[in-house]
Length: 65
Image 1 (tube, rainbow, N blue to C red):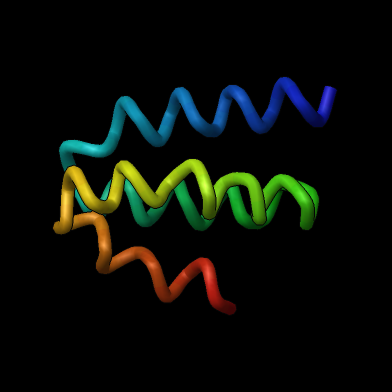
Image 2: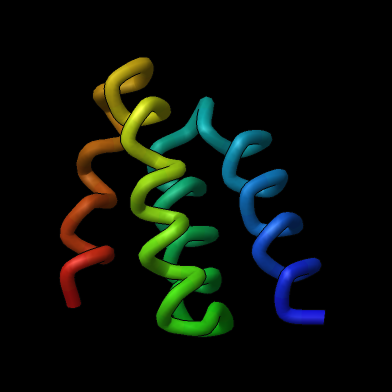
């Protein structure tokens, strides 16, 4: 079940990546629900997305809380 949540989170984040505010909100929800090792995987997964869309970098501080 946890793996399904991780995959669902990636799908949602991809779909809302056009809006940095919405992306930050969904990222915050994900960080509350995912397991610690999944959060680390999410950070790795997000790196190329952040390079492609620099506006999403405003959400990076959420990952370091």
